[in-house]
Amino acid sequence: MPYGPTSPQSVRSQNQRDMLALWQRASAGRLFPEITEFAPPQREIRQLLLWGVEYDGAIRRYRMQRQAERLTEMIAVDFTGRTLDEVAPPLLKPFVMESADECVAARCAVYSIITTIDANAHVVECERLLLPFGRDGVVEYFLAALQLISYQGTVDRTTVADEFRARCEVTFAGVIPSNARDDTVIVLPPRAEAIRPQPAVMVKDPPAPAEPDSGKHNRRATRRAVRKTGRIKARGISEICTVRDISAGGASLDVANAAKVPDHFTLVMEMESAGRSCAVIWRRDQQLGVAFQ
Image 1: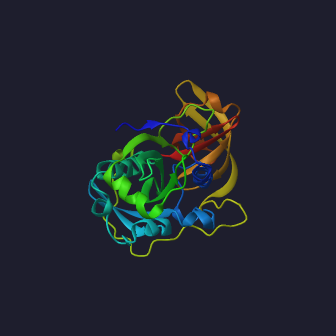
Image 2 (image 1 turned 90 degrees about the vertical axis):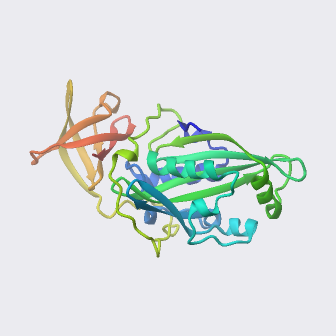
């Protein structure tokens, strides 16, 4: 099914909106953060499944690294170590595999709603939020957050899994980039098919999401404040800017008017002769977040 760009406002449950906002803050101007930079509340960890992404040429496989406690309560089986195509329910398998592929290729969050009818004839919705993590533009993991909602009564977790396996319908699916905001035009980043994948890697001991802290955001260790003067160069534009901080993958810039800067440009920093090709990831009034290409 088509996955159009959508805003964080499309996410219905407050828990998942908070999770998405946390992932966006951890991205800090990049396409996505590293898994160790993500610190969800302890109460939400019980609903998170961690999948490792294995690359074998053009083929991707997804292997469960950690199963959510809530899922274990529903199905009474531990799928840790097994691949997604092995454990996905037959009825949902095409969509489950497609949404995982979309998350990794689009390098965006993927939000979807799957609907079924339970034994009491109540409509039950399963909200799925997939969040990518990795380094250097390559997705290495994704977290799957599941939220069951019924507006007609409580949900019996011991039986509702059978209802989803027997009959269900995907009623919504969309992608949300890390720079998406409710009041801005959403532009999707380039897809990962243009990036040469890493060699196949078996992930044996996945890093855990960061422990929750006092609410402060942890940037990548390689990002550093520089406060250097730079120049933005593109067709018809040559503007002075200030590079606030920089890492191997990107930078944040202070500019006179972020709206006038094109989506792609060359950044030349003071004392450097070579320019860096940049793609805009997020914009504010006088700030830009860019990824180096």
